[in-house]
Figure 1 (cartoon, rainbow, N blue to C red):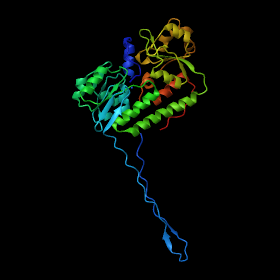
Figure 2: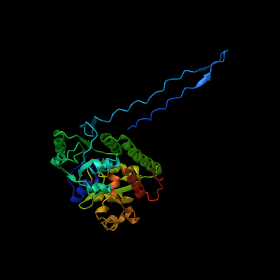
Figure 3: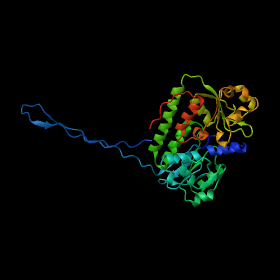
Figure 4: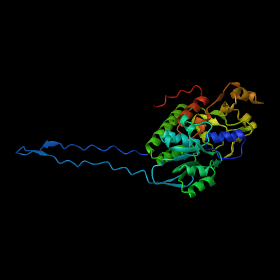
Length: 344
């Protein structure tokens, strides 16, 4: 799920918003310590066995189900058993479920123009951005629904599902920490907290390596274009991708107002970005088109040829591919940056 809230935007911007889109393992049982025999000093020199402590057993891990889980918006989902029919109402949740090995349990998903992995495309749609087919979800016998918060999915639809007895978890990641928290929550909900910990560890490792590589450098003035079909849209200050740009060594241009993505053309010219990243390249925007915009020929990024397309989905979709996204973003902002190879 994209971290952007629902709002009235041009058609392509709305499409972008829709497309972008929100433990511990049991220790092995300890082997019993075999008794040891040592001579006991005595005049008789009779060998005597020294007392040994009784072998200890590892505590039995607590069962994962039944479980009561709290979501990002204060809601509660009660899971009587491991869910077997899951509905994902955000693209990020779909990716997380597949990453956790639960893809074969997804019976319905939200419409996604860039489904990942490939198998996700075969799952029937039960929702679109802004609408949810509650009747269809109930008919599928869903025993867990993962929905998007901050109005990504209509709150009234979420309430309907809960009123009908369907467990719903609402997730919303305004930042990287929120994304990791949601991965952990979903992992717990499907019965695979260890898998969630591995995914989070991979993301945290990638973030740490990028931070180390960009440490000490001067942040690069970066305009990340989300849409330019009717006005210019870039990150809001409280947008998930804004933090990603900073981690990657960029100084992001934003609207300056929380929840607002539209950026005035004059503000872009005044900011004079050193790098322009085209998150809308997948929708046909080219570097030549950007360079030809009135007045943009004076921008540092245009003069130096630093106008680049970027895969917006892996950068702004808070799911398992964030590790790839932060590396891609860092190199797009700093082409000469050398990063360590990702851990296998």
